[in-house]
Image (cartoon, rainbow, N blue to C red; front, side, top):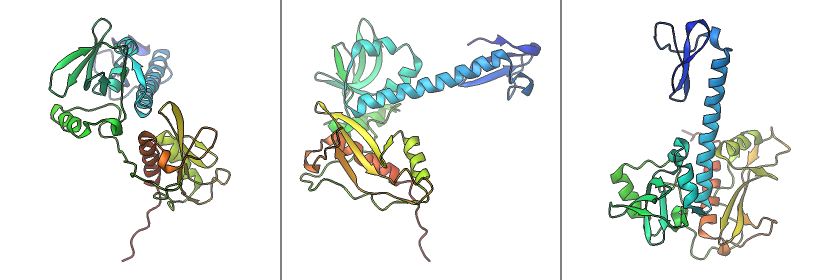
Length: 280
């Protein structure tokens, strides 16, 4: 953006996600002078930066939701938001599936549809009504796509190809997984803060990850400690899957995406536990 006049002969603008300032001689300063902190133009631009940060986070979160739920996404929607750089940062190089065509999303046009680089290295245009942004556990060519992505230098805005995935055992028994139980946190507050940072809501002492799979919503629920004792020590418990009404789902009936996302949630939260130093 161009420079905007502020008080005292200074000019300000947003550059690189920050409010920049230059003096009357045109020298760009290392920081906005204290005297300009409450200048209306500086305040306005600071609010703009905050909004842009939130907007970028919302775009990434939305695309991650599409991916985690393997939702069909209208091509018209992608072409509509493509002029927005925040949406491009979230969508560019995501693997999309359009019929028999699989490849990396590189462009979008209202007339031509989506420009996709396929596994042959060719750029093709596809224009179906919807495309899939599949979860990596559903990609048959995952290893080939990862290798090709490395050759192209692909850097995805959302974690798809290099998302931490977990394959469900062929014949799991029971209705809970205890791989990530027994993790100790000094306070319930600490594990609650970790869940908030990771984007997992906490309900009834359990971190929750909702997945839409096979036409139904499934919730992975991971015990992290009673919320009404926020300063007490917390110990993680079992991971389970339920219907939205709380009905438990046997492990053998949990779908591959719900399994992977639930395990990913538990593993990521568990990684923040207190790790005791080994005795010498």
